[in-house]
Length: 370
Image 1 (tube, helix red, strand yellow):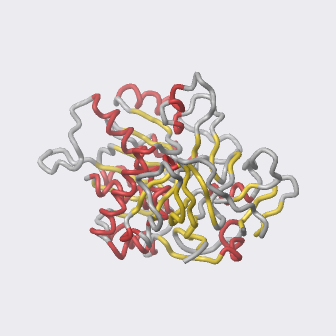
Image 2 (cartoon, rainbow, N blue to C red):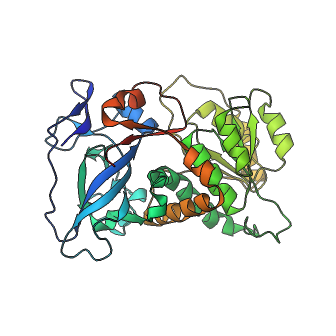
């Protein structure tokens, strides 16, 4: 089969034609024909050879972790999937340590040991190939109506997992549900960054009932700002509003959803988080020179304002199911805006424009098959 492959030792990224075709070997396995694979910053970092580990015995790693496929064959014990179903595939696989309570309970997104594997990232081939076989528990069915946007499921799970954590944490106080319009308190959320993860987070926050603001660098007008405002959120540019001005305009900030990976920008924003607020880190910055931050102010605010800061990575089954459900809500409320999140579809042979080059747009995907 063809696959987009990274060769870490020789520092090559290329389309190969001899990737082995997988076959069902267990009764609980499913074979899937890949339709589309999204490209994100993780793929670009792997192609810069920052990380990315091939499977044992292989000198390359097949890329891709944001997937949409169609079932072509199921094992004898598979009952909830059938040929023709559209599916999205989970990325992370559990470690093998008996003492890892998280992995033994199907929550490898909270793996204690760090010995998990991830498709297209760490020790398992990814989805940027023609056929994939995996266990049925790692597939999630998407409705035919989501055919044009279901590849957004995996990046949306980042926000879904984080918002589930927010719901758990805020049980600590009489916070109320953001979606409860009878609540006199208006819950306000700020999204840092207007890339795919940030925009999907904004969509999810609006659906959840937050008064949502996206704070990003590019001045208006721009395509991301247009999308933000069409879904009922507000776009604020850092070119004409510094952090103090942004915070003054919004008022008490209940939630910050960071989606930039820019640590200085994030920690500066942490200083304006409101009383009882939560700050969510989702970006993973590269190693840079040290930056100055006001640790006294941040610590004082965390204590005196009852603030919480947490990081979130990967996702479990519940986040995938919620992401598919929310995509259905997005399409029902904003069909054109949801489709507009995907701005380019490219052939596998054009992979370099996406993972090495600087293709324009919000979210670009590689089209594997029709």
